[in-house]
Image (cartoon, rainbow, N blue to C red):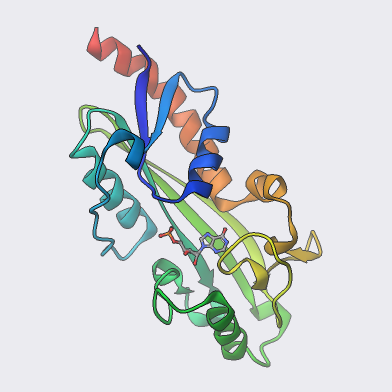
Length: 206
Ligand code: IMP
């Protein structure tokens, strides 16, 4: 029987992405719902690493599977790294991204391009059966635009510009974005770590 891997998210888009990137790992990939694991973590950490570990540990308490969780957000240098780990909660969880994005554009009014640098950050945490913990981090560097552009993606994508592509991340196809995104990169690094760890887990079990 294949070893199970649970990804601690309720987000279908993230599940699709993780299934695609981790498809050649020798594991059965399950969502929290499919594994019957409750999503009861309180994201009260102050770093992406802390929050990802909090989510992974909370799920790991309910299952013997390998558990993965992620935490991500947007860091704007001119704003001292805001909204950072508060990206989803910035101006309130239920506030639309139209409003959040316009607010960030307004806070950067008159700031020249070279000072508008920003990055999306994603940290993936893993808790292995037996309790060992791993983390991986991926980033993508960009510039905060002066207006929203593009209909794709989600969240802060319409204001996040990639100068070398001449467009925002909301103007990329999902495949293009997955290839270069913070989450795609963090998942790739985690996949390589798990490829090294899986044979060791099997030996421990034997
Ligand atoms: P998480 O689901 O707790 O990791 O929340 C991350 C938040 O960061 C999201 O709700 C978005 O506001 C923002 N974010 C993370 N990744 C992206 C992205 O790829 N595009 C746009 N916004 C993102």
